[in-house]
Image 1 (cartoon, helix red, strand yellow):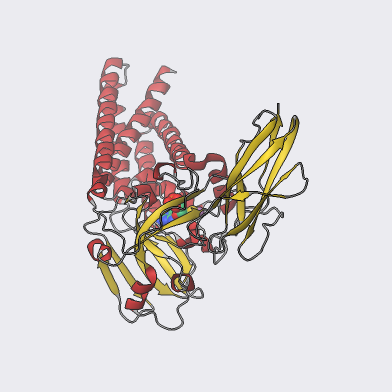
Image 2 (cartoon, rainbow, N blue to C red; image 1 turned 30 degrees about the vertical axis):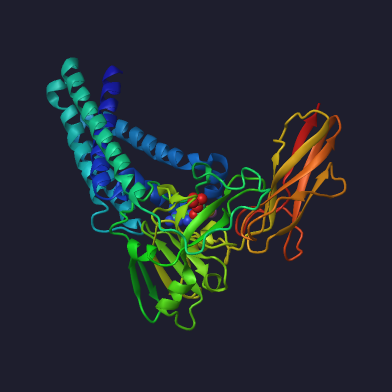
Length: 489
Ligand SMILES: Nc1nc2c(c(=O)[nH]1)N[C@H]1C(S)=C(S)[C@@H](COP(=O)(O)O)O[C@H]1N2
Ligand SMILES: [Mo]
């Protein structure tokens, strides 16, 4: 039994060292090429939409650590088995390492931005893991020289921990270029928030939701970043970040939300964005007749397809460089992301953008559309109750019921609250800077003791009342009314 555990531990330690060395190599070259990252990325892309939805809903921002942890656990179990079986037949060590190497390399090659280098960290991990396990199982230890094994195991574990620490330190310090970026003043500043906008109108960057498929936050060097505008244009453009920042900049308050948000869910936020309006840039490139889709391609290979019309119809579609007065945070797309008021993020808000390609919807399906999500990705009219919290126990008497409602590009004209399915009562709307942000609403409820349900509905600027029909987020955004239950004391 003890021998089995020892051999299993040898397998796990060997795999750990292999992964750590590969992560260090990836950290200093291409973070996206680390073995767990390429395997996790391949799994994400192959995961059926229903499972992805489940993960976003149930795990929220923990989806990524849970996925990486699961991949690591499977790898550890496999490595333990190889350690045990490899004791008697060394060929199993070679075969096991080769299998892992091939699996990692194959996953690496499926990555949209794969180069000949991408499989290399996975192959290196396999070679190191195989050689280390071979050494840990070496015959000299066999008669039961426990101390020799322990020495070897400690050596391998120490090397793995140090290497992994090196990889982590490198990754943390490499993100510093962001704070050096100086932001020019906008040519067209945002209007001051109207007096009466309540706290919480703007979402702090640290609290802003994050949804993406990137297992490692892409690290983009602002000094070498370029934006290529190509496809159905008369003149291809290539701009550096300096060149982009020399163009006139606009600053706007815009609400961004995710199509995966459930009714009442948290994947929505409002920020003050600074960016380069897209229309003049496209005019400079000269869009050729027939183009109807703008495909933004990120540095890590995401593609987001936006109707060209939404960049040209006068709305503030932009290449954003800053959020709430500071350069974009890495997880929100540093150095440049797209933003299209009125469209869900999957349809208009590509982060870490590196290319804009003019094409047609007939010719190309972007990432989410390929997976069945709707085009064009227009946001649904919706509303949410933020206060009181579900299952709260407020005291009888006046209770403030408050929340947000949104229908970017159409605006919100009315919000109503219903208690226990009774008549709809108009809430007060706080003033907003434009139709591209959510609206804060509040209503004073004269609460009576007992259990009660509270529902909210919004009416948008076209006169459309938010539908009561329930729909899942897939494929075009959740509908239905947010209803909460409280018990008045
Ligand atoms: N490169 C890249 N951009 C992306 C995504 C992604 O997975 N990769 N996800 C999109 C989705 S689905 C949404 S809702 C928004 C979220 O932006 P945020 O994370 O800054 O809130 O980014 C969009 N841009
Ligand atoms: Mo999204």
